Length: 246
Image (cartoon, rainbow, N blue to C red; front, top):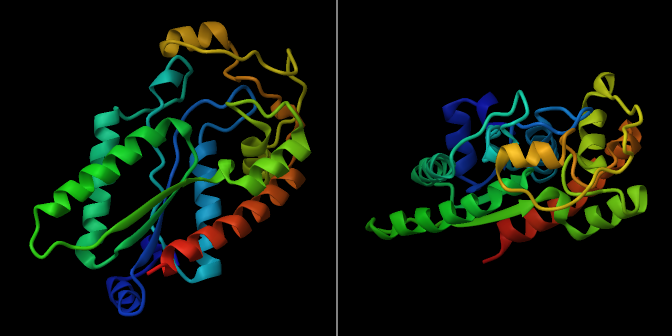
């Protein structure tokens, strides 16, 4: 059910019986010394694909570059300006609406995207107000790692060492997808410091290895597989409710 693996007649046939679509979004940014640069996009895409398969809902290509300006002091990070990301999300939504999609669930893997995505939702609705007849559109944003059952499982598996960046849950999920890349070697300090930061240079000075409050050495492919199943089951219920509500 991946949009980019379908033909246009297949999409047209799908729209004859469903107007729902899932749009995963992540980021391309550093995730500490052992986390993959593509962690946020990989996690969002994996959950979205599983939910799409469970519900028979089309999944759009993942928006893999997000708003990651605060990570730019670490090599490999790529970022969009908030205004650029807003325009990208808005243009994607307007494209989908034009074809008849009117329920769009965005599964997000990066906290830095949230404010801009919500702004894009509002701006898209304002653009639709200019059209006559006005197309219907309902959007919802869900951060896969913040759903109640995933948060409970993360605490059970990793206690108070989850942290807020380069976390063991997200690292574990990527290792479940790519076990050959797993690198659970101990880090020093085991648990990274926490605190605020002001821009990319200050981020690297305060958190020199890129982690915030986390111990990703606790991650494992086994834990990642468990978290992916929990996230998929919970997100499938949320998505089903969203897609079927009147």
